[in-house]
Length: 274
Image 1 (cartoon, rainbow, N blue to C red):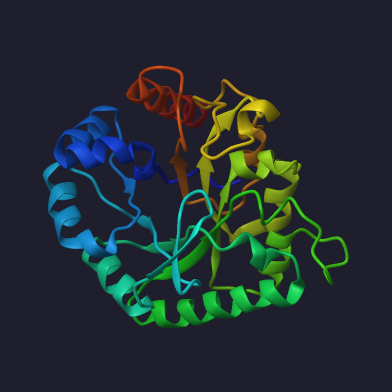
Image 2 (cartoon, helix red, strand yellow):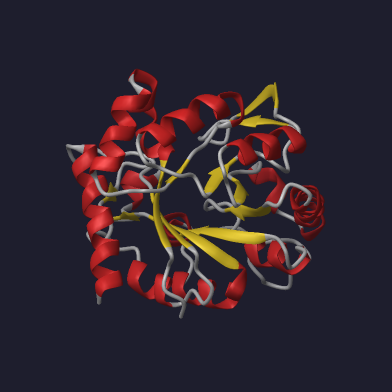
């Protein structure tokens, strides 16, 4: 196993705080010991983010931006008519922020029921990877549950994310969200092992996985890393080419969010020390 080189935080975790004060939020992130962040919706704010990250001693080696969808999709999966930025616009913004990898964060669940549909997504990501290379960037895909929780026609029993991986150019990476993989009922360490060196990053996210709390979006079961039922330690240990471990909460109902973030960071620090 390769020891993760960077522990980061997905800023979607702090979206409400960011809306109130970018600087106060980033100060809190830096105060929790982070030197790296993973921004979302960064294209329209690239210059602003770049200046703010520099003020707080932060860098953004990875980020989330749509690469394989023509229009924005809400975090709950709801479609919109709002066009996504072009890939070149995404990569120009990513360059402004000093990124190394741009991960596509979400695709329509309806595109994950047949091998043919999944292969279309792979073609779009492969094309994005070719365009990204001209900017000195890499691209990848970040999963939720729908890439793993349904039968895929024509896939001979393989999971959708595995079908995608089979169709991707070797240059395209994966960022496995360990919580959503567990939420889909997957053997997460086994999945990470099968995906192999393509897994460059993981979202370190935990929860009880109680069905009554995970039925809606955002799920209501998430807890600091190491306090739930997601097999985080085994899943991270199964990653053979890991570059980034990224703390994230879709939602947190247990009190102080910054304390929860710090606890998740502490889980990763303790694991690295061990």
